[in-house]
Length: 144
Image 1: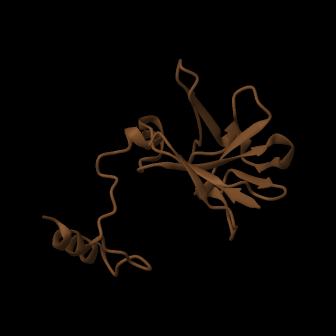
Image 2: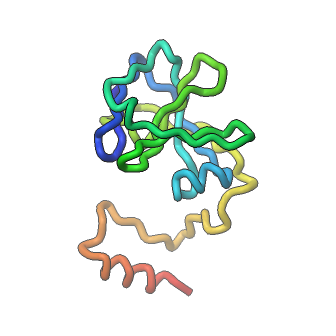
């Protein structure tokens, strides 16, 4: 399984079956992704290989040990070693192609964003709307 960042500067390969995915809903993961949750998995270092772009990776680490590695060109979060283990943290959104792994664990749901709810009336589009105006109109119709 191959993966890459948004701009394509950072590329990697995972050998073997991809483990299932977890989603973390903590405030740190929300801030680093700008989304409701961070979807990722762990693979053994022996099954992970950088193909290119390691020189494009910048790291940020909090005093608590929380670490975020990202592409210095496009800002995509990229894989990084998981502490002092033999595992590599891999953001699921970077993976190319189809795979059978699925989300099997949700972490820190007690600190989920208050807006993270999928109402029964939530609109769903198979692809993006024809324009930003169409999206804005759809959002206005569902407000209230």
